[in-house]
Amino acid sequence: MAAGLLRNLRNFLAADVTAKRTLVIIRTGTRSSIPCFAIVNRQFSDSVPTDGANSSNELSATVSRSPLFSGNKVAAKRFQLSFDEYQKLTRKLRTRQRLAGVPFGVTALIASSCVSAYMFPNMFDATPEQIQPILGMDPMIFCGLLGVASAGVGFAAGSAMFKLVWRVWNKEMAQNLQEREADFLGRIASQRASTYSKFEDDYYGENIKNVSDYRQWLREQQKKQRIGDKYDRKEHSKSQGNAEALDTS
Image (cartoon, rainbow, N blue to C red; front, side, top):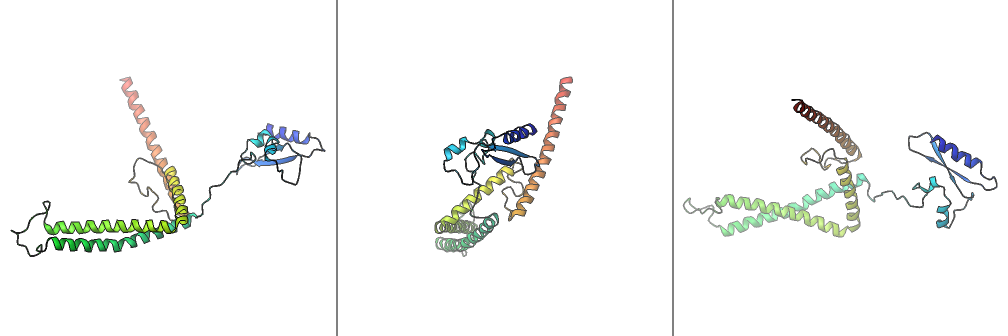
C-alpha cells in the first residue's frame, strides 16, 4: 500500500504544471487511517463532462476498477417502509385479521348447530336404545366436533378474506409490505444460527418488534452458533480419538 501511495503521489507531482490534474483521496475502509491516492488523468474543470463514454477512458486503472468511479450506479437498497413502520403495520394487520375472522367463525358455528339440530331432532330426547352412533361416536360428540371444526374453518376463511380484500384496496402498500417482508425473512434466514430444527425459540423472528429486538436476536444467534461450533469441534475431536484408538488396537 505504501509503495502504491508513493508511486501515485510521485506521478501527480511529476505531471505537467500547465495540465492540472485531479487528486482523488479514497478511504480504504471505515476504520482505516491511511488514505489511498488515485490520479484522474484529465484536466481539472469545474464543469461536469457531458461525454460519459470518453470520461470512463480517462480514468486510471485504480479508479476505473472502483464501483464509485466506474460509471456503474451503486443503488442502495431502499424501502418505502422503515423497519419500525413495517413491524407496526404487520402487527396491526395480524390483529385485524383475527378480529375479522371472529364473526365468520361464530356464523359457521351457528350454522353447524342448526344443521345438526335439523338432522338429529331427537338427539337430546333419545333413549340409549335409540341412539345410533355416527362414525363410531356418540351423536352429541360428533356434532360438537363438527361445530368446532366449522368454527375453525370459518375463522381461517374470514382472516384470509380480510387479507385478500386489504391487498386489493391497498396495492401499493401491499407491495411495499411484501418487499420489506421478503428482505426481513431473508435476513432472518441468513443470520439464523442453525437450520436443522424449526422448533427453536423465535425461529422466524416472531418476537422481533423493533431494531433493538433484532439486535438482541442477532446476539442470541451468535451465542448459539458459538456453542454449536464448540460442540461440533468437541464431537469431531472425540471421533478422531476413537478412530486413532481403533487403528492402534
